[in-house]
Image (cartoon, rainbow, N blue to C red; front, side, top):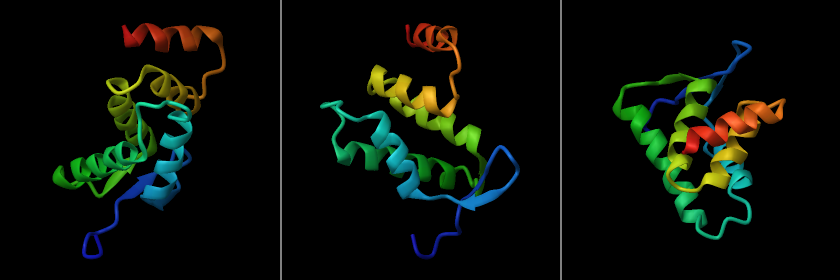
Length: 107
């Protein structure tokens, strides 16, 4: 990765930061807490896959919202509880109805 150009994440307020694998790993780990079917290797694999997808598509810049959507797609088929946990933080659920809609989206 040393020779790769950094991927830039554009946050919702317009500020930018370099793609941080560790930050993304922490967010995924929190969502996957106490989920026995998701070992640390799988979390790292998700991040590897996301980074590879972005690089293969030639994307050196991505909106944080789009990055969150990609993470959700990876969690969707992996573990429903982890998906909902990540979505609740990422999408900043404020009501029970927002949770309900997310749950219905899994069916």
